[in-house]
Image (tube, rainbow, N blue to C red; front, side, top):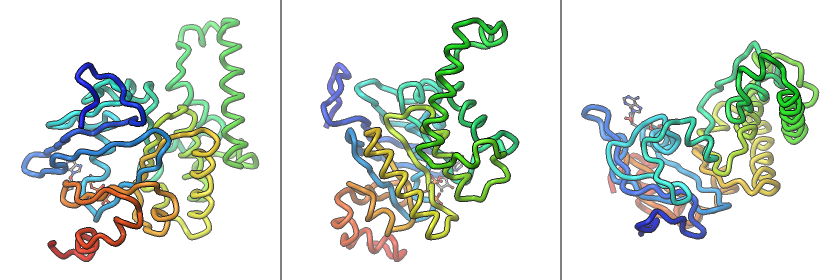
Length: 265
Ligand SMILES: Nc1ncnc2c1ncn2[C@@H]1O[C@H](COP(=O)(O)OP(=O)(O)OP(=O)(O)O)[C@@H](O)[C@H]1O
């Protein structure tokens, strides 16, 4: 398996993780993990607590530098590249919990996200040139599109910190969408949600895939959600990948069942 000696993109493959290892002192958070995300697919990443799922997302998105191995995105070696570089290439992540600035309104918080990616420069914003004005109206339009898509119109001018948890998580998704991801990595987006909120968010995830063709890597503990949404499932345990296959195959895999029961296969 290779992304090509010259780093050429392999059709179908979007992201390639090759033999990635990550150590924190004596702890091996990831060991020799190899996996890929194909264009347009939703790959669920599952595993017991502490298995290394968030660490893997952090290695892909540039928050952590792998101790060994390689991460390739569309043929480009992005191992250890800075977060903003990876995000500009279209690889965007959300976090566990919420990462929102509670004092901003919903619309403001989406605008700030766009400015992070499509920054038109503080200087031109300060002097308010005609170019800035065109850009600004384009950004507002993009934000309105996301607000409409996520059906959060009634909350447009409400401060994010005052929203119910499920809505805050929806705004989190909106902030990620504002960065126009090609590969969206969702780190336990449904944690702490009630059934209705989970169903809502699952519907939006499906809609994002259908309307934008976004590829996704989803960390999720709720097996019902994983089985419903994923095309493929990769399983980590103690920093190692122990399974990779269709949801059905993985669900029936004795090694995976043992890992979830806490037994040692
Ligand atoms: N910044 C860090 N410093 C030290 N150890 C860390 C750090 N981040 C993660 N680890 C360790 O790496 C291992 C994997 O943790 P990680 O958070 O990636 O697992 P996870 O599968 O995402 O778990 P959870 O489902 O509980 O979120 C754990 O032993 C954790 O304690």
